[in-house]
Length: 94
Image 1 (cartoon, rainbow, N blue to C red):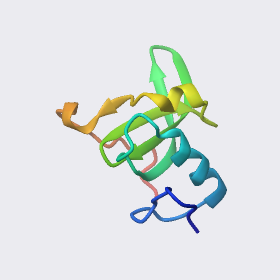
Image 2 (tube, one colour):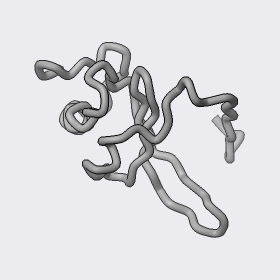
Image 3 (cartoon, rainbow, N blue to C red):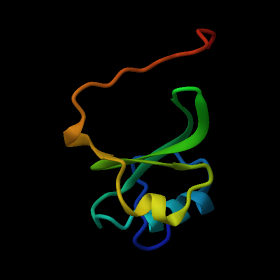
Image 4 (tube, rainbow, N blue to C red):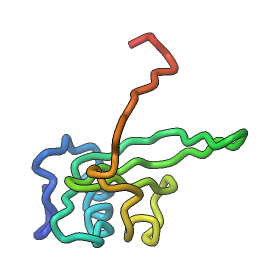
């Protein structure tokens, strides 16, 4: 499942080839493993962008969908800098 150096032990595998590519891009810190990823919508003012949120062990990455290498070289934010988080559900149907 994993290639050498790619540790995805905490993540449910959706697309092995894509996850291996993402893990190679997480080069800001060698210890920052890929935990998971999902599509998200980013809204700033009136503009809406479809993005990809990537969870590492120590930081969070936000990139275009599909990701570009430069966007994953530097974390969007480190978990230690997050003071508050809120989950927003648009559709209440499960």
